[in-house]
Image (tube, rainbow, N blue to C red; front, side, top):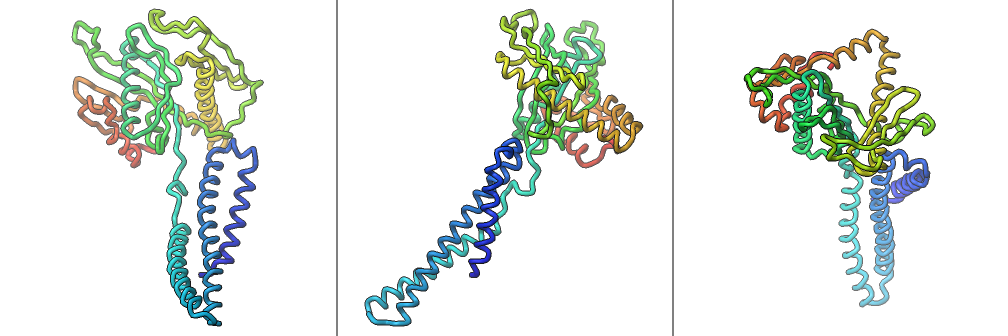
Length: 357
């Protein structure tokens, strides 16, 4: 087995990676840092195998030297045995080395796990819209749970009877953006509210916004561009009022974007949550501005109009969910609201929706 040239090349590659990992600025590029660390660990195993082979080749050469000049029968017999054992051991090490060289990191070439921010806001319909916001949140939360995605509540504003005026949460995992990015738009519900005594069907709406969470170092926000304010968190009926000013509001002065978080008791955690929402909104605005610059204002405005359109209706009396972009309906609405979104998500993901969504 030709060891030396490849051994030397891999050692050089290893040294280059060590030099890159020594750069303190690399810590801010988490994906790159993790990829280089995995590569370093793999190369260390390969180099160790090469070192074993080199040491074994020296032992084999020593045994061959003894056999070429036999002087002691006992020593010759020992050399023959060592030569036999050495060749068997070398074959095992070479097989292990070959496997390492061909082995691919399961994460190499695979897309990095996404993290998205989902914002749900009650629209037309008052308290019924706020209750529908709860249903949508539970639907997405259960869908995320079924796929093994992590979730984190970032902010919420509750109503007196347990609805949500607004709820913002993060979902992280492989494929989140690809699968849920098309959920943004107006969602409409048609059903008989619990508070309706006459049995009439009401129509209410919620808006859903799906934002891609920026990766580290993707956005550079200057501290001087932020105005950070604290206030007392509040909840329905005052029962969750926090006596300390733990809630946080952050305003990005250049863009005018303002966000808040009050779900945590810790002011620091609320600040981190608010920054997460702010970064996602800023990234979305920057991407929209870039699209407008490249494609022209007309295309950008058309895209914004589409995102504001009614995309889906949840009709409880008829046990039907209709996606208006696909012009397609599904039944068994209770299962869908329980997080069984796979069929709808698959339909959108497979491109059955009109261009532009």
